Length: 215
Length: 66
Image 1 (cartoon, rainbow over the protein chains, first blue to last red):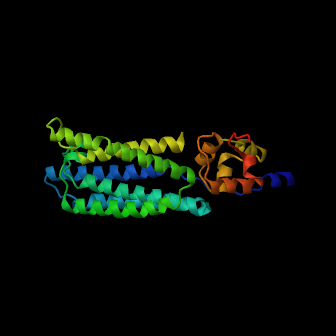
Image 2: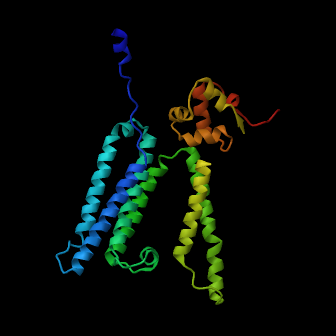
Image 3: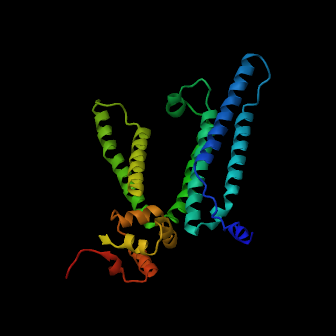
């Protein structure tokens, strides 16, 4: 009996490590719910019935999504507290960037008519002034805050990956941009597309960063 | 630059993650140093030397034979 009691002594448990699966499921679930509510409103409008207010669906979905994320991270609060100061800042910066990206993404999808195609919705369709101003503020202020926290928390190895990735992204801009510009002036190419150059620069940056960080 | 980090870590029975925690760097940083893909900064090299209680040149070898 005594030996059984000894065997049943519980060892101190390591705090559970949070993963990316549940936050992703919660975020996609919230977006899916917003889509269902938008579809419900559309069908109700076509049938001549009462519809939800345009802001109600996104608000319900966002509230449930934020609540889900809150409870998920509260469950892992011990893990977060056990992290070093550097790592806490690191995950705070990444979390902040993800939340801002999620808010802008969901807002963008609801700012546009439902009958738009994916390309039109993501790249070419017109946007409301409210969204354009709001998303710009989120981008600039959010990026500024999260980048300050991020750069104060990364280690040497990641800093090196970031610097080389930044340089590669810069080269991916300064090589094609003037070429495209002079080709357009000679009538050999359409006008230079700033967003296409931006995407090229960002993709190059991301690929080099991931390669140097995780190879 | 060659280094003995993997051996020194194994002698203490530490995982890469455990060593990373002690140095307050990422596990990827420890892995990159061990595999020679990244040479640490001087502050991190000193941190390693203090952790293993040995001079930097006993951990890292630049191949120079004067």
